[in-house]
Image (cartoon, rainbow, N blue to C red):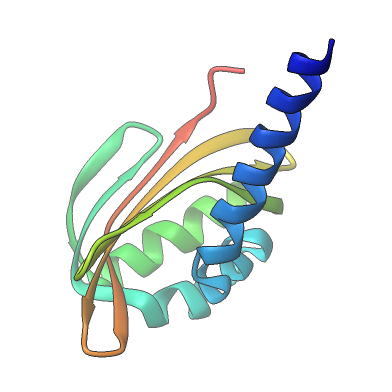
Length: 128
């Protein structure tokens, strides 16, 4: 019993720590479907996959595709499930809760100076 409680506490602590270090602007933008804010993080070219349709897109094309996704799937929350950072790259994984189901989100970022840019974005229907 004590071991189970410790495992639960460790998992909860890990989830809190993962979200504490995620870029709060990106997390907030996905939580409410703020396409303009997401657009401010998009690189000039983005590898974009939304619901199994993927390709390299310009920033403007990516913004249009993300906007179309959010019109079909109005978000209610976004929770970070994993965050990894290296010197010039970052990986953010999370669950996007919408009015039409839950989606797994993978965001790969690069850093140039203090600017963080999304270079890859994948949004897929969750298996659950």
